Image (cartoon, rainbow, N blue to C red; front, side, top):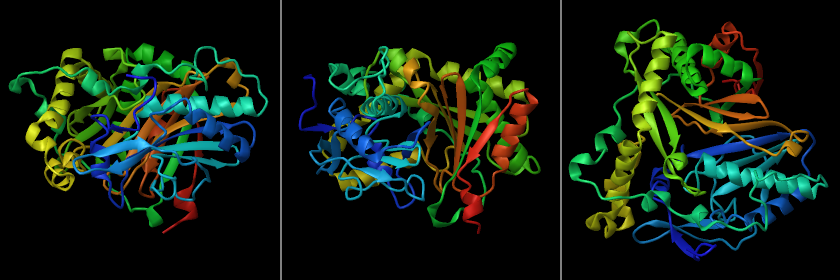
Length: 434
């Protein structure tokens, strides 16, 4: 493959599902935001965006609707930055973003980039935003040394960044080895709450010292993901289910898995599968039990052979000749991937830990916080995410309803473990009281 994409190209195997799942309430958006130490200069941010796009051809695209599939075409329109909207994760449309499947927002000292999942996942987006902020800071007169941590403007483009790693790692498997049932999941408890008006989203961030949290995890023989996931399940149980656990479906916690390290991929497009952690409200509601459940689920779902079989399962459907020849409008009817794999009844909450956002040391003086968040909607009303930068862990919550009970219970669990927590919120539920 050349060091640039062809004028048009297919969506990666994972991305194909996202345009089919779009509706009035959901577009599968996620956000990476940088809170800077100084107010943002929008003129310089606009220049930085235009420069950064020259290094990331897989982002310089627009989504098009074909006869058989959606596809990406090269976008020659000028990208535009946006003053941050009052409603977080407002829908990205062809008109409001000049066709780009992402939106760069700014407000005071904040730069927040929203991505439509069809273009990339959290790992790919992380590389793009790191480069954007790095370029912005250098345009602002700060001499930032990239320290091999930034894909800088003008640096060579690795062809592997542009590949569909699902197809690249596809291998034929026997029908009996297809992982259809493990991908489908089962009915899950749905978090209850009075929805916020105007499609509003409540956003809350908790900051803590990652070293202190790691020390506690070492003492408990678990990872940060296992501990935080267990605390989330307990928080939902305490605030939503405890008084009547026998009459609700089990907890189904949705945990995305970055496949790059398992298959030595360098793609900037989607390359993610997921693990579902099932917990019984009646028997599993102890911290140690939940940590073990998450550990076992991730150990099972991170087995490379199983991951390879799941890749084969997702790609096999795309390669089925009858399905390939089916017009797009019929694919939408029969495919129904949103309900088969990611349906509204198949998960209670999502928890995605993007890990370390590895920035050059020279950026420490200019970046206050880094947030990674996933949009919520009435069908999937609660998400939790985590990202660590310069020794700080930011745990973020997004919800489509007004109550902050789950976050409050979660913070109490952390403080009971000896973790000092500071909190920031958009206070949507206060400013837009029902």
